[in-house]
Length: 416
Image 1 (cartoon, rainbow, N blue to C red):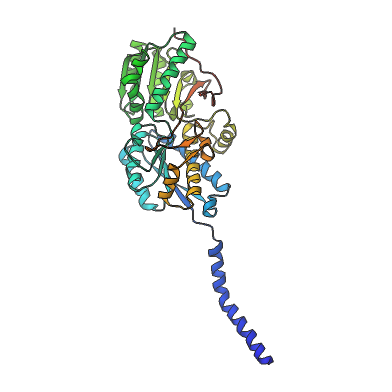
Image 2 (tube, rainbow, N blue to C red; image 1 turned 90 degrees about the horizontal axis):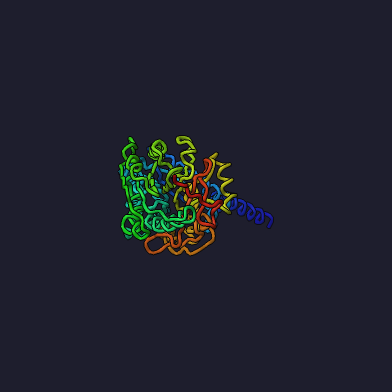
């Protein structure tokens, strides 16, 4: 009897010993960290638009860190998000090659954001759409979501909407400040997609609707080598309102310096610009703050009242003097993907896209976008998106419109 008991105990011990390695192998699998969820950021990191790409990257990286520090994607067992970055360079062809390479190298991407300049975004999204990869963009060009695509989402108001919205605001500002509306306008712009969209509605019907005569219309191909001829025509006509629509800092520098030299800068004529680069800290490194004083900037997004905590964290983390549209919008994009993944419950690009299409919320990622609501129409355009008007004051671009974000009232430059 004792011998049988001993044999039984030895048999059990032997079975446990043989099974133990298999059990130990199974434990790591059971408790392993879920696979990272990869999101792409494709922006210009070289060439004339590199500074904007850098600011977008800083916003995206901060968002990824914040999301992961808060527990990652809870619906995926705490999976971490991982940013995969690529450089569009300075041309449409380079941008297209960048997205093609990235899709080949990273087949598990669940979404992407970028590519700042509307022309580059158009090229990138031609490729991402075919891959059924959900894509978020703050680029302004109307055509981006005007091609019937199903996987492209524009968080900014498109350029034509921005233009139609800003004209009556500018007319009111002029009336309130001078007692009369502007009667003439001048345009100096590059020929990229966003300025073209921004001015189309103005040229077609906008100016006529408000009794404004377009007295000079100058279009150039970036980068600008010499600003003399275009600014000379602005000086000759001296409009009540000047639209300076560039898409990069070097062109902006040349134009502002020449406008100041010829007496048609913002202190003499109200100057209205468009785009996140016009609020970039980089401007102060190349242009004297006096040349920027009073310049108004129409953008799709910016931090203002109520956003102080996020801005302070961004400044502390990056060393930047303020958080621009580029950084804030791309920060918000990462949270959109986070919210969509929580809803989808799976790292599948089609289901993530469906979750983005179904969004209708003022919670979560919505608080990082002007207007505070996330909903996309059938074209992929954000419903109820608002414009923000900044004005340079003493070397800082501050929001002056809408009232919900404004930290000061706008000042309309007095013309001599």
